[in-house]
Image (cartoon, rainbow, N blue to C red; front, top):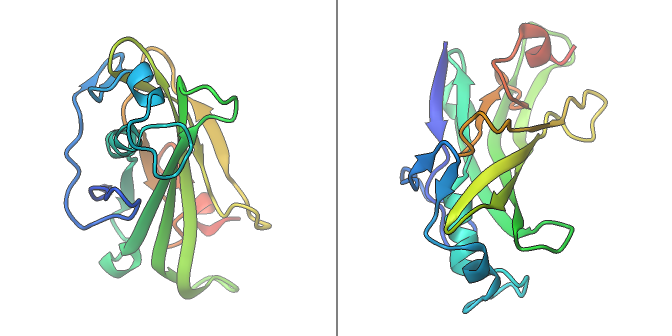
Length: 196
């Protein structure tokens, strides 16, 4: 059994508060954020000089914030985190596609005392990248998701996946491994959780 935890509401500066997310309406075709691709590209306010309107960045980051699902055995203290985000036009330089980076900074990794060399430690960083694409009007759709799973380590299981046209293109559902915080597109097996 898993417990659903939505990422908290986002602040304009890119940090997160502890309120709940109020999402834009998710349609089968995507999410209507009320701003078209053209409105996002014609930045009236662009504090980070990335040629993407700051209000558009905020609305996209809020609307596509991943839904995190934790294993029922996960303790509340090991779920505590600070979350930050950044949004930029995708590397191709087209505002039609925006890449949103969510940094998940867990305060504690309790580890597994029963497993040798799986000790806990303070701090545990993982991340999720969501690529969204502008459709018609103010509708945007998640197209690609990258989930870190101990990125850059010897036990790196990070992977990206596309979201099929037949599925809603809203916020991705992400399953977090028990105690170790790796991200997966489906519930984790014990071997994934233990990284063996």
